Image (tube, rainbow, N blue to C red; front, side):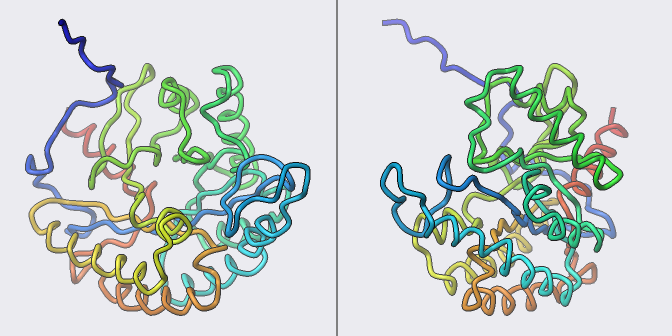
Length: 301
């Protein structure tokens, strides 16, 4: 029997983590840390959505799960904003453009403090990978244009709703002008992905240190999730003595903005926020990471 080669994406080759880089992040730092804070809006009574309980039967509006997620936009996100401000932490805000229809003041508040705005499709009630190629191209274009018109500059990065892609998605993102994607969680350092329009940087976005899969799916308690953040940080600090690495923390306000979880999030972030450049830690955003590696790549050519 002849075995055919496995289907491959051909976006990047294999490179083990033991093949180390010798450069540093800005300020001679070793570990780049960012918070990816998701602001999402969902359709009422239809489409996909994270649930605190099983969805309502067909034909019945899912009030319980819709209202739970809406708590994040009305309450949780504002409390998290106060927390980030108190600790002087920059944030990469990963936003559905439907937020601008539903609660624009929320996204404006993050943009007003200088946080990076990252495109996250139109709504998380829909999967991007199920669109036709022309529909997906138009979705990407419209989201980029709308955020650019609102905030005076186009977003640099993209995270697909539900991390749902077509095989052509990286090509469409680069074609539209995006410089990086958060969709691929396959390394602890940025990787250049080949597209038909040039390199698209893959910036590490966590699926383990992410409150949806950890808390909502795997039923991890907040104390354990805070411990995960703590242990990931300190282990990667040790590992980054040998090479520059990236640590992302993915948060959703309807989860970590609940008061009992917020208290534990505050405690762990307050401890970690004390580590700055003197301890070789760079608190940053995905866009700043992408710009740094892109500039290095151009110099190396």
